[in-house]
Length: 84
Image (cartoon, rainbow, N blue to C red; front, side, top):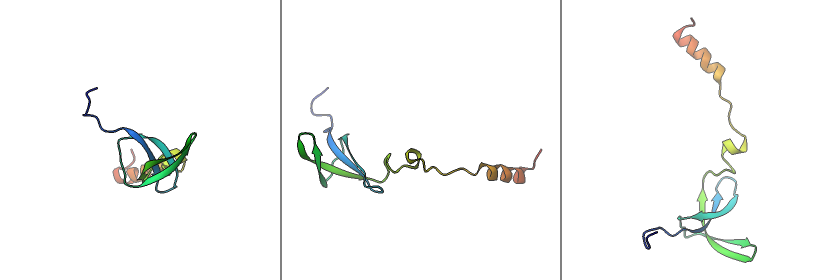
């Protein structure tokens, strides 16, 4: 890798704005907000980035998917184009 051309890749804490769940990962994002994270060898201060949707609140991962009204769509199609 060439020195000086890659962004700083460091630990960052992401917080789901809907549920309040937090998780620590690595990213190139930075933030002026910080959070104290307790690890195995003490507590550390990391940048905190708030996200609107994560796996903790996304309907696909929580099982709260909405059911599609396929019967209504089929009936509307038949009304619009006739049934053959």
